[in-house]
Length: 276
Image (cartoon, rainbow, N blue to C red; front, side):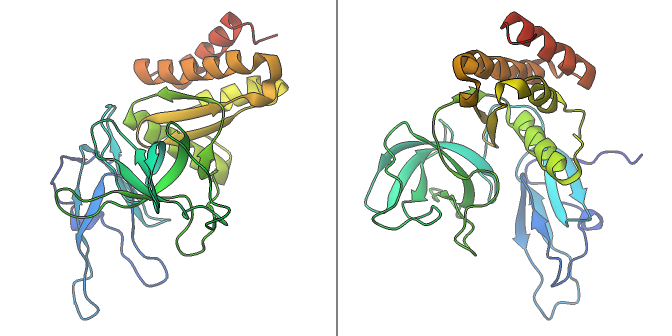
């Protein structure tokens, strides 16, 4: 097993760790990595120059041609293009919803027509305090640059799989940004292969045990927020939602392994009187 490569903010990603690219399989950047320059069509050296924006372990997916950083557990989030985030609407203007992504960064802009099928007549009527599940479209360059969000794929105008758009009902829980990244990777892997990765089984275990109550919906924001909705559970909706939040936060805080995650789910569901 090769030694993990740990990078600090500003460190350059070694060229040997950057997958080769071509027109059919372009390089994709995940969280924590930024493109400093890219080769011209006449360049003999086709290597991209990448740098880390956060501290973390370099992760390379050669099949999907993705380079990203597995960040350590912390509470601070730095917006990065293509990240999924849960944002809260602060106020609206003629063309934009002004959204809070984190308490310590400037408000992000979400176009009022950046929703699937939105027109001036059919656009969502969001007010202060409402939540949206969005993707970071751009972060700008330089001091004071504005972060822009979107709830559609700019190329197609369609909402991407995963429920982008307004989030109604449910509750939001705070988790570390590192754990949020793990949840997103685990969900993506389960959808593609059917098996959790990274030793993270808490969601799969909750889904199995709460299936009789109608299951639940979840949206994970890379900014350290997770939205949970158990409205299909009827009278048990609030208890089930709180139980899921407790399981996720405890798994995060105590860095539980897969076996302890299963024990935690069983214990909390029993305490909340949700298990048979």
